[in-house]
Image 1 (cartoon, rainbow, N blue to C red):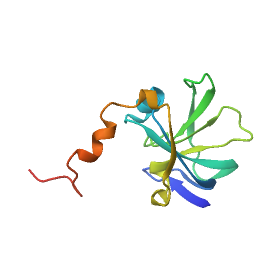
Image 2: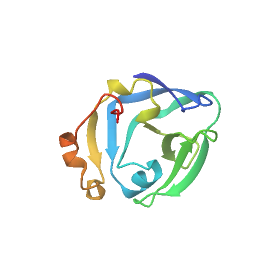
Image 3: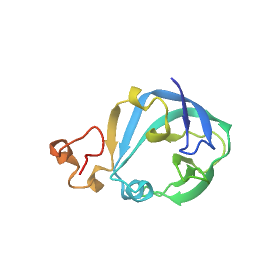
Image 4: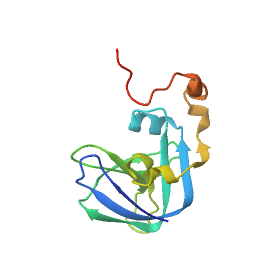
Length: 137
């Protein structure tokens, strides 16, 4: 599937070819910390399947809980997290952050990983009152 995406401020835009319906939800503590959220959801690209059509992301290399070195791509201006990939610059498979993907509603999760790190309240979230917008006081 061909998709597009961008950062919040629009400085960085990309086109990507993805592996069909490969939305993964990661609950590892690294993803929680780096996203400032309870989990992170990613769509896997085809090998070398991402082309940046505007701007160039900055990268931070971290050591994952698995011990692998992972490049974390983000916008140097607005800070939007865009992807994670291997440290090498060739044969990259990108884990594209679902929030930056224009077609995010077309994907559904196929697996959750690192579930032992999941926040305890996540399974009860469907029971919490939900509003279409911020409720008025």
